[in-house]
Length: 103
Length: 103
Image 1 (tube, one colour):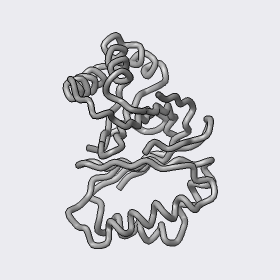
Image 2 (cartoon, chains in turn purple, red):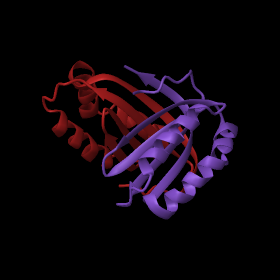
Image 3 (cartoon, chains in turn purple, blue):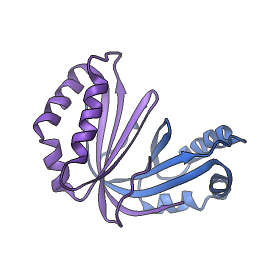
Image 4 (cartoon, one colour):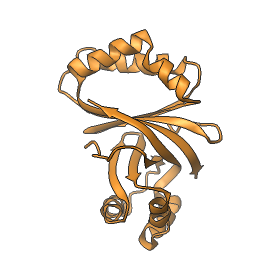
């Protein structure tokens, strides 16, 4: 699904990751994090795809909303498990969306 | 692969798409566009994944580099074919990457 975002400016968080071979609760936690994110103030939408590389882009009203979500207790636990078990490597990029257009 | 980008600030172009069922040259053109993009001035890297939704994020030094690539003759043709044949729907977001971190 393509996220239905409001007019610019808004923020995008690009989360690019390479998984380990370890599953142990990954699918449930990933689904729960998406569900929980959608409940946060300032959440605007999310897009996700994975082959060898996984890319999840979440969209937010402003950096305060991103900071609050990053510090969410359940999300902090997921981040810890992520580093300990699920991700070989990841990169997070916080971006100001200046322009957008579609078809 | 996770793109090895330089220190911020730099730009990201998030291309999110839903494909039609039509293939007709899609794979070859997609590969050729990635190859051609990597040759452009100001190109910094690219990440891509597709399930039902496809997400390709390309990274660029500045908006001039993005504008020049958008106007590239071969790329213009690919964009036209994309709208005519390959994509049901897409969205392009031009973003200033303000902060990044990894693991």
